[in-house]
Image (cartoon, rainbow, N blue to C red; front, side, top):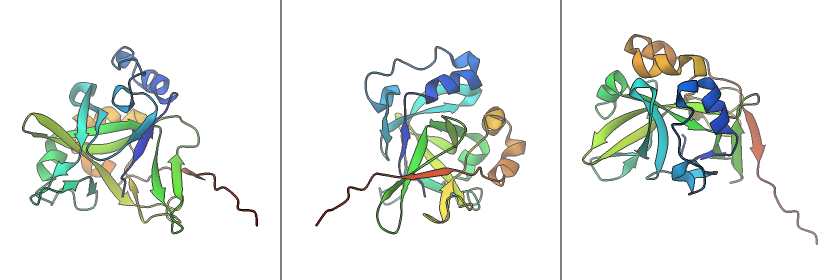
Length: 196
């Protein structure tokens, strides 16, 4: 499950290093999370994506289900078979740049997950048009050892060198859906000590 991720001040320079052609693609980072300023991205918000032609754009998080509820994640193991996602995974793949993401442990403490050696990670997603809007979901996989103590699912992450292939080469989709996931660093929010 991935229900919240975030931007920080450091990730944008790394994106520009990974994709120099995007050096002027993102707006200034001084108007809240939609513009790229530090902050959390939650379902129903607009967030930056890289999609067709490595083109940056703002998409809304969550496909609308038949019952009107938002679907925010798709399982990598079944995405190609589910009617809600099958066409999108074949034709409309994207990545969502992030500094990290959150999950909550059994004690309901927020745990922040990041890559230990990079300020940006690329969450795999799919998108589809929805009236005048365009919406995305984040793809998840069974958790690896670095994530499993907190949650049994984690977002599928695409390595920078595979981003273009994920977006543009459908013949690699199945391979990238099943690739090993990177080890992550977990950090729990500070807990205030109580003195009696």
